[in-house]
Image 1 (cartoon, helix red, strand yellow):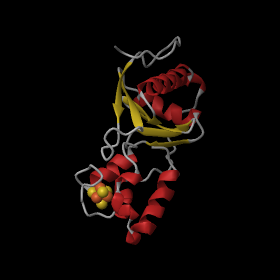
Image 2 (image 1 turned 90 degrees about the vertical axis):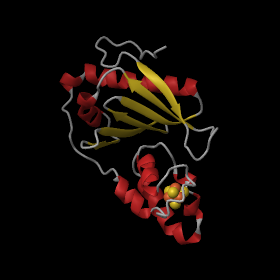
Image 3 (image 1 turned 60 degrees about the vertical axis):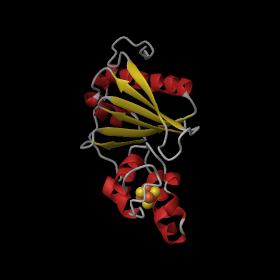
Length: 186
Ligand code: SF4
């Protein structure tokens, strides 16, 4: 059954399929990422979200808007909204409905918003990858450090999933990664 975002007159998102994802390094993890697979393409609303909400990061090429709300990391992509961390499906559903409502509200008010294409710094996969141990040891659950970097950037995994970063020789790398990741949402 599809989740239905709460009522607004002009809805861009009318429903979504909810999927729960846990970091691959910790099967059975208590921490989840909730993902809403949308029934529509929200590409057009992204620059309006970027303008409407002050604390956003927008990457036009990657077509993603990132923001933090209520301590959660939120990402808006053309066919996907994600939120993390969440404890369970119920919390994910509640938060994703709220975020879908935000999209609908922004879309409804778009005639009063000047869209913003200003891009704020979001680290690239390569920037994150360069700071990883680059041994491709697979302990994080990903086949390569590059895949882990991509997962980090998308908020699908977390630094703690790479045990190699706890080694003394990678202490500075870990600090640098923590600093980078703390400045943007997902
Ligand atoms: S655990 Fe760390 S070093 Fe090993 S593959 Fe994953 S990211 Fe690379």
